[in-house]
Image 1 (cartoon, rainbow, N blue to C red):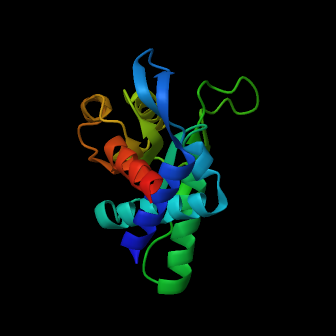
Image 2 (cartoon, one colour):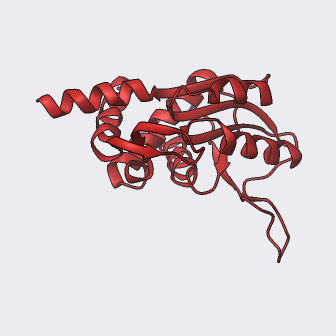
Length: 199
C-alpha cells in the first residue's frame, strides 16, 4: 500500500534527517531547521522506501518515463532505488515498464569520454529528474539543463522534500513543460518530527 510507504518514509526523514536549531544553508540563508536527506536515502529501509515512493509518483504522473536521473550526489541513492523499485514492480506485476537510471556530474569529466551523464542515455528519451531536498532549485536546474543538452527530453521533476523557499517556481521557469511534484514539504517533515517527539 503506497500510503503506508509514504507515512513510513516521512517518519524516517523526520527521525533521521530533520534537526531544529540555528543553521546557515548552502544558499547563505538562515534557517531554524536543517534537513539532510542522505541519512535517510542511504539508510537501508529509507532508501528502499524512497525508491518506492518516487516510483509511485512516476507511475502515477509520468508512466511513459524511460529513465530517472539527477545531480550527483544527493540524487544518487534516489536514482538507484527508484530504478530498483521499477524492476521489482516489473518482475511481480508484468505491466509497468522499467525505469533506468542516470547521474549528472557537477562538471564534465576531463578524461575518458568526457561525458557529463553516466548511465542511461538515449537521444529523445523521456526522462524524469529527481532531487532530495529542494530549496532554491539550483541543483535540480543544473541536472535539467545538462540532461536536455545531452539530447534527452525532461518530462517531469520530482523532489523528496520541498522546503518551499522559491525552488518550485525557479524549476518550473527552467522547465515549463515538466510538471513538478514533491513527496513532502518541509512543513510535513517538521510536523512529523514534532509529533514523534511528543509520543
